[in-house]
Every structure is written in C-alpha cells, then in structure tokens.
Length: 410
Image (cartoon, rainbow, N blue to C red; front, side, top):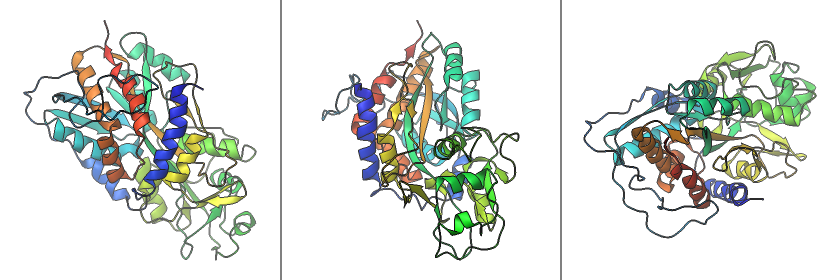
C-alpha cells in the first residue's frame, strides 16, 4: 500500500467523520443551487500580473512531496493572479462552487471564475474538447477519456483527477405521513428498475411495518442529463443487487435500459421533481435535498442514515485506481461494506485538470484556484455553502503535490 493510498483511505475518512459535527446536510435547498447557477462572478479591471505561486490565504507550502505529513510552518505569502478561468460540470458542486468562487475572488480581485453546472458528463466532454480549462465531475475520467485527455492537454501526461468534494448521495422521497423509510439494496434496485411499482408492495411493507404506506404508484425520478451522480448511484445498485439492477453503472439514463419514471435536469431538477410529486423518490447529493426526508439504506442487516461520518467510512474501505499517473487521485468506491456503521452511497466529486497547459496564464490560474479549493480555507467555504465534508490536512498536502506539478508544456 503506497503512501497516497494510505492517506486517502485513512485520513479522509477521519476528517469526514469530524465534519459530521460541523456541517448540516439538511439545510441546503434546491433554491441554493438555482441561486448559484444564476450568480455570475464580477470581473474587476485587470491590472495584476499572474504569478506561479499559490494565492494568499491557503495552507500550501512551497514544497509538499507526496507522502509527507502536513507541516505547522506558515504558508508562503503569494500575490494574487488575474484572468478568467472557465470550468463546467457536476451540478452537485454548484453550491460549493459559489463558496469557492467568492473566497477566491476576494483574494484575487482581478481573477474571474466561470462555472457552468451542466452535469458531470457534459463537463468532461467540454473539457476534453478544449472548451474549458477544467471540469467538475462526480466520476473520474475512464480509460477512454483519459486517453482523450492526452490529446487535449499539452504534453503527453494528460489529465489528473483531484477529489475536492465529498458527500453522501441521499435517496429523498415524498410520502404524506411517512417521515422515515427503510430500503434494502434489492428494493432500491427494484424501484429504479421499475419492477416494484407501488408503495404497498410487500417488499417495501415488510421493511417498514410501522409505516402507513399509501396505495400509490411509485414515481422514481432520475437524472435526464449525463451525470456522475447517476453513475455513482447505479454503480451502488449494480454492486449490491446485480440480479435486480442488470444495467451496470450507467451515466446517462439510457432509454434502452430502465424505462418509466421521470427524468429531471441536474441535482436541483431531481430535488424539485421529488418535492412536487406525491409518491416520488429520487437520488441526489445529500447536501442539496433540503427538507425532504431520505431513506435509510440496508447495510449488513441494519439500516444506515446518510451522514458525512458514515460516508467517510466507505471511503476508508475503498481502493485507489491503479495504472494511472502517480499524481492522480481516482478512487474505486466499495459499495458492499460489511460494517453497519457505513453509508454505502458516497459521492467523491473531482476537479479534472491538465498536468500541462499551453500558456502560463492557464497554469497560474489553475494552480492558484485548485490550491485554494483544496486548502483549509477553501474546504471550509464549501462546507459552509454546500454542507460538504472537508478533506484532511494530510490529503491537502498530497493533492497540493499534484497541483504543484502543473506546468507549461516545454
């Protein structure tokens, strides 16, 4: 087990556990996401030269080799950067991006961060086409996409995945008079595969003997756009109930696969559709479901509610993807833990960036912004705006080593 694997699986879980006391996943609403999408960064007049050093206010040190522990030294003071950094991707990151953008632009008034929350698949597509400088994605680049990144990025090293946003995926539902609901993997898979179609189905009733379930058709709501949240959720069903969910891990909800239900655009669309329709159930980033109740998920013969602490334990049980650049942080999440304290549907959302860019301005902006996002200050900003769990100091040091390696192709 290498040092990066040890830090990702151990320290990240501990930090997520601690975050359970400081974040509030139940307070974010779909209006937050909508407001974020409508919020444009204000561009100040340019006048400050870009610098290669990290922005002031981060916890970065000049040297952070992989595998080292966080230091107590004061961060080096660096000047602000300028220019426009364009990204697109995961709508699950939208509320967090608002906090990141505001904090970064306060320290860098001549810099503008633009982010279009079009969904993970769309974000990766735009990035690989060269239309954006970075992507936000709830799924890391697959092998084909990584190969494409070697063509898109300058140099030959391609892109890397940086896990900057961690959250459980909740299963919100809308049933009058029902505030809590237990669902095991087979029932969850049956609902979304449309083999369980009514709330009085014995498979649901047997798990909820005290609930007054209505004789009502189930309306399963899924993402209509390419979505890393969909890929994470369907990966969970594929691993835990393969005999019921036979479609594998899918990112677009293919019409040739599971039929029926209702499609909705983005995280906010799913949350709004579930909230508007009696009998509806869906899946979404837990920090953005607002006041909707969420199902407890069956694990090891018990039922587990979502929380950053419980989601962190599944990251601890997961493996780092092999065969990529040593600076890459893609994680294969284990969905079948044998520990009943684990919530098995955790979303690890990434920023995807090139290791080499064509221009110094791109390098300066990417390094400065990604350093801020992964810093203690940046993680606190996303926790406040989106209810995400901060990553640990050790993981920040590991990620900083990758960010520090970003350079101009020469």
